Length: 171
Image (cartoon, rainbow, N blue to C red; front, side, top):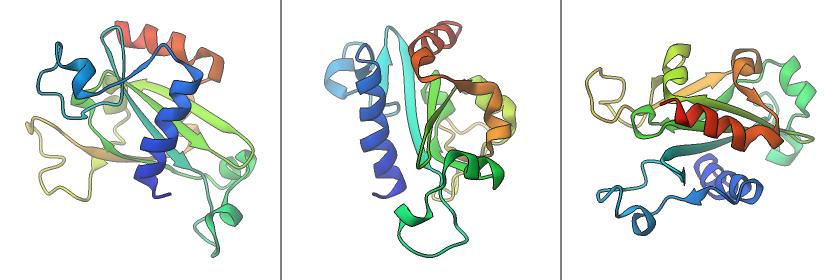
């Protein structure tokens, strides 16, 4: 699965399977609140706009199929693996759920759009020449961050719902 498909297909379904209270954001179910909704965020819960991104931790220094290059969680940390999240639009959502997938463990980080901007790690997205220009209505960027950099946003799986609600209602 391509990275974008992995995040959209697997990541969103994974979060929805863990937290059925969240609702898939669609034109149909958000028409009354966002008449011009066009997929700017993935999930919705009581006014909280949620974007889900997933990244597989794997070695880029070896060849072969993805399954043989996938890191164990400890290997990802030891190798300072940089999780890569793309098509981040902080102006379009309140909370990000980032998923790190290792061969033996799934790791979750939750941060608000404001927290993302404060990291200083949001760089321009390679596919849009207007990305990264201050004043553009929809800023779209990407990050590469190690687990050390992501540590302040680490959340245990059973706390995802509570943290999204807490962070999302502070907006």
